[in-house]
Amino acid sequence: MKIAISSDHGGNNLRKEIIALLEELGISYEDFGPKTSDSVDYPDYALPVANGVASGQFDRGILICGTGIGMSITANKVKGVRCALVHDVFSAKATRCHNDSNVLAMGERVIGPGLAREIVQTWLSTDFEGGRHERRINKISEIEAQEQ
Ligand code: RB5
Image (cartoon, rainbow, N blue to C red; front, side):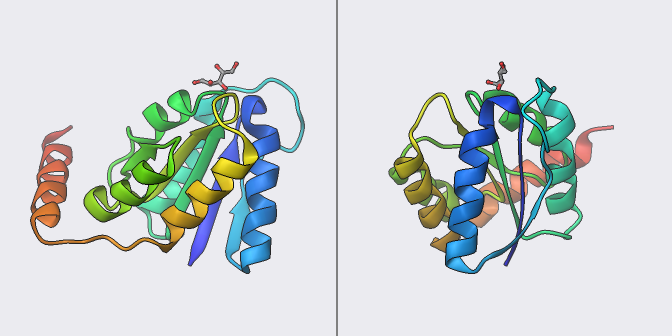
């Protein structure tokens, strides 16, 4: 599994924590920054990760900003991306089982590093259930196909 990860300035610290976790787990990743703690615009950092997942270059993406909201809104504009904003372990599992989410968004100002680590581990290790959930995912893809 190859992960693309980025944040904005509001998510810098948590991104570094999650990168440390990926290294501990031996999971391959590419860090899309930012490289400094300067204030940046979250869409500029969400887009390369979302595009990388949508194109198949990466299996999954992880996006972090202050709330996770701006990152998730941006990522979900990209066709093929199913980004879930998650701040609890139950939802991390449910969104993999039911939504086959391929991008995870979290807010550094919302949760602490310990919970974020548990969320990421759960989200990375939970499989999509398919079945009736596949039908629902396909309906999302049909909506995307109707867009110009
Ligand atoms: C940056 O101040 C903040 O707006 C951003 O990190 C994020 O929370 C936006 O959704």
